[in-house]
Length: 225
Length: 196
Image 1 (cartoon, chains in turn yellow, red):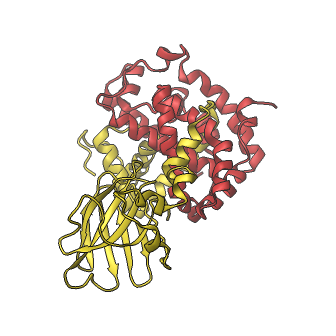
Image 2 (cartoon, chains in turn orange, purple):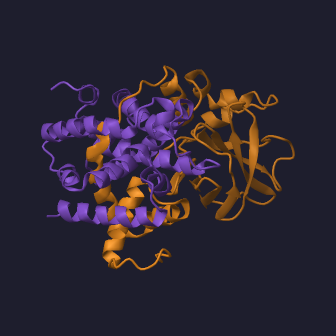
C-alpha cells in the first residue's frame, strides 16, 4: 500500500505490522480502513498479523464496563434469526394457504423435504440447499443478489420455475424465474425470517400476483453455515 | 479481589464452549451465550458508539453475526469472549464509519463527564487478574507498561473508545501525520517487546 504521507523509513514488514495494529485499533481513516479490511479477508499473512494483534489487545477488554440490555432484546434477535413466532412458523401451508384461497397444504405435505438454509452473508457468501423429491436448488445470498443453481430437471415445455419471497405480511412476492441451471436474481431485501418458495408456473411465470401452480419446496430463511 | 467486571464476566472457556455449540446451531446454547455475554458486549457498543439507542440496535446485529459466524470461531479456537468482543468492536467501528459525519471530538466528556482514559487504569488491573486467573500469557499489558505512558494511553484510548487518528491528533494537540508516525513507532515497539 502506498503511503502518501511520505517515506518513514519503515520496512514493508514493519509497515504491515503497524498497519495490522492500526486496523484492529480502528485509528485508520475510512478509505485506508476499508482497504485494510479487504486485505484482512484476502491476504492470509496480513490476516494472521491482524489476528495476532486482536489476541493481544483483547487483554484490554476488561476495560469495558457491562451495560444491561433491555428485556425484549433477545426476543427480537430470535425473531430476526429464526422467523415469526411458532404459531406462524408451524405451518408454511398456513402462511401460503391464505393467499387468495389458493390451497397449499396438500402439495407441501406430499413427501417434500424442506431444507432451505440461506445466510444473508456479510463478506462471506454461504451456500444454501433447497431439496425436494425430484429437484434441488442451491442458493447463495450475498446481501445483494441470490445466485441459484438447479440440480434436477428443467421445468418442462410450457412451464417455468418461479421463486417467491414471503415476509411477515404473508404476501408472496416474486423474485423472478429460475431458468437454466444457474440463475442470478437481484434480491436486496432478503433477510433471516423470510420464507423462500419455488413454484411450478406456466411459461413466463405466474399470470397473477402470487403463485398459481404447486409449490415444490419452501422454508424459512435462517442463518446457517 | 472482587471486581465488578470480573464477576460479571464468565470464564473465557465457558463462552468458547457455548460458541462451539452455537456453531452447531444449538439454540439453547445461543440463549445461554446471550445471557453470559450481552451486558459486556453492550458495554463495548455503548463505549464506542456513545449512543444508547444505537448501541442496543447494534447489539442485535452483533448476535446475528455471532449466530452466523460461530463456525469461524470453532475453526480458529482462542478465547470465546475475546472473539465476541472483536466482532463487537469491528461492528461498532463499521457503524461509526457509516455515519454521515465522523464523530465529534468531544466524546466521553459529553456523556458522563468521565474521560475514557480514567477507566483504563481499572481495566489494566482487572485485566491482569483475568490473565492470572486463566493462565494465559499475553505480554501486551507488561509491554504497555514499558511503553512511554502517553503512547500507552493513546493505544488504550484507541482500543476502548474507538478513537481515530484525527481524534487522537486533536486530543494530543499535534498534526495528523505526526500522530500517525508517533503511534506507529509505538506499535512497533510494542510488538518488538511482545516478541522478546
